[in-house]
Image 1: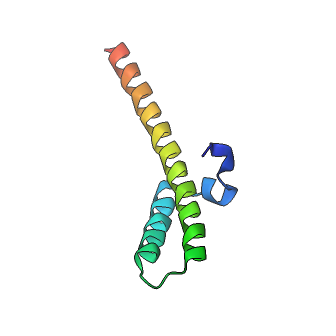
Image 2 (image 1 turned 180 degrees about the vertical axis):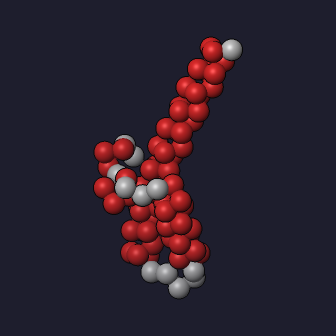
Length: 75
């Protein structure tokens, strides 16, 4: 799923907020009394949140890498 397919309400979430919603969905999906149609929608939302979290983490890794290179260069 490309970033363009991530809804604005997901893109606006912080890492913590996204992680909390992911945990809520996982708990809901683990419930044995869940209907299939709802589970499909929850799964799609879970994928969107996961892609958003992945994007946020990659951005942080890039920032850390850039800072590390600058520090090494200054030494």
